[in-house]
View: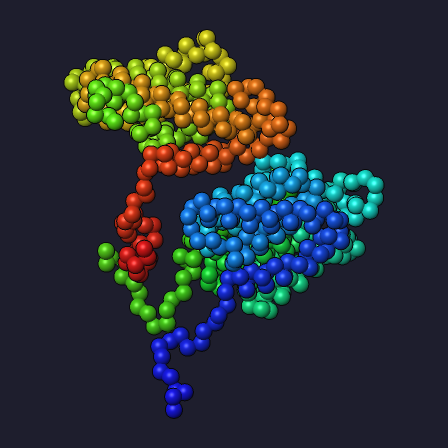
Length: 316
Length: 224
């Protein structure tokens, strides 16, 4: 009889810790990182190591200086480092990557209170700071497999040379054989990672799907071409942003409705920036802008408790 | 430390750190963020504002019993605008480069809240000498804050300082710092440093009155 234990709810507890989630995210990023090493050569590895190492270092020093308990163990700094590295071109000098890590960890994350307290995605903000500060170094794209030839061949990103939308080109884009940041080129690997996370229930597909879907629809309708829509979502950092940055827990809405609104907003802003803005790529800016709007989205998409009465507004 | 000084010295020094108009009272943000892309501009803007502040504080203090309370704001504007016009013509004639780089922000000194704030809070209640000391202190504090911001932004953002190239930094300046966003970054960092220096603690009790989510938040006051 003593197996019948009477206890208050919750009855079904889940012992998922932050570091297990972060480890899953790192696992999901591995295919894209592997493809990046294959396409862009061995320099990918030290660049990623510099990003991850400096992120952990800044996290440690920051927590130490602020006299707070240390949070390196939760692996979130590692995830930030890897995602930041994936947002950089392979030719970037190492010290710029360190500046990016500093912005991500110290300014965006720790000054606002550490993990879970930051209002913007650290990696995306760091990328934007680097992009705005060092525009030439951050757009120094090299052609795929450049390390096999004698000289580095610079090449435009697919976003920079839109117009060629035949099927072979689309398949190249899907496999990642194009210029760009480390981790953003291979849509296939990113899709694998994203689906893995969704299967493990780490992320919800609401935001990625509405992000990619709205961008695809807008681009296809505006140019009256199915291929063009595909081209727009395969080129640039859409898959990386949609699966790994528009699904961040701290900086995106909690509710399902909110996630869809978030994704729609990202898609629309990306489309607007790509077509009417002066920057060729708008994924990072769109995610940052929607991060800022997240509290308001949550306010408007708040779930109504079942059977709850309307809250009286004049109580205070 | 202020006890053994005469009040006048206190009026003079309070503006430099303790009641610094920009970094502690957060007044005059518009010129602070807009013109501090170079250290030289910061000094220029600071000195011009100091001059206007000195003149307006003295005149307003002298006329404080003549100006009717109901029309004091228009009266202050007329007095401040006269000094701004004066310095505007002087700069245009003698230092045209500074006049060009300050641009619209020179005429906007007329509605600078530091000058208004000192006129309203100090000069209209105190004597001429005290007001002059207050103006010089506040002006110096403003100038120093702008110079500091301008230096940081110029060194990091364009790899120069007062127009002189700095060898290593000038190869890869961090352009963000001479953009508006960099201005906010720099200002936030300096304010944090000043808070640390003056040991100012953030308010412990936040309460629901200042919270933007208080209306929709069901748990009144439980969030702390």
